[in-house]
Amino acid sequence: MKRVWLALAAAPLLMGQAQPVLVPDVSERSIEIAYSFTGAELLLFGAILYPDPPPARSGEGTDIVVVVKGPTQSVLVREKEKLAGIWVNSDSMRYRSAPSFYAVASSRPIQQLVDERTRAIYELGVSSLQLSPASSASPDVQARFDAGLVDLRTRGGLYYEAPRAVEITGGVLYRARLQIPARVPVGKFTAETFLIRDGRVLAAAVRPIDIRKSGFERFVARSAERHALIYGVTAVLLSVLLGWGAGALWRRF
Image 1 (cartoon, one colour):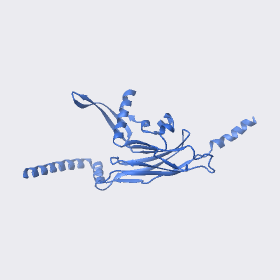
Image 2: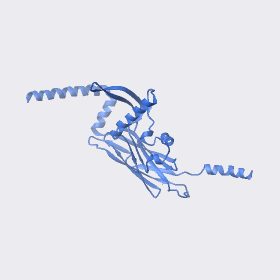
Image 3: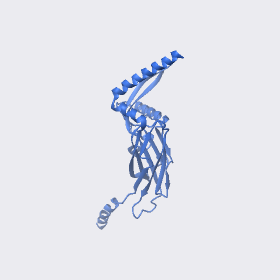
Image 4: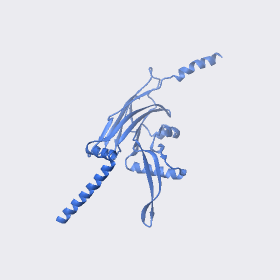
């Protein structure tokens, strides 16, 4: 009975053991896209704070995964097939929400850090993204369209993985560099950092990143969003005017 009481008394202490805490940051909280924007390099860095006193082997076996994710958007994926020598649209699938941008950097390949279930829970890795199709389809069809969407965005530089891109110094400080492509969409991004040890996620922290257009590009984007009708009419009239001007110059010369 005495052993039972001792175990019950020790349980709160074991449950209350302090876990490490992440203190992350990013080199740029706001990225502005102008006409000359060719991409950017984002530095993600931070520190791991261990409880006082730190446990033995606190820095050993520690891994970091950093995920930069763009705003979700509705996407229509079309499948093409060759018919009589011509490529035509055949089947299609719409996704209610898919990340517009997804990049993950890790200290080691993610498959070596956590199991498949944990990767799916935290969406660690391109293959673990939880895409949301708007209509039901057989698992084979959905898997085919999921792979097609990921392949399209991977080739466009919008989805990618960077294993071993995270450097950890002394088991305390870490840093990683991720490339933001020129075609990156605008919106509210998040940079999520995960501390992993022995196949478990011990801590996580999030920092926001705002990517927006600036200058004339921002004016055009806002006009199209807030005054869609006026913007459309202006664009048509401008196209007609430019076409008429080009025709007049062609006839003269």
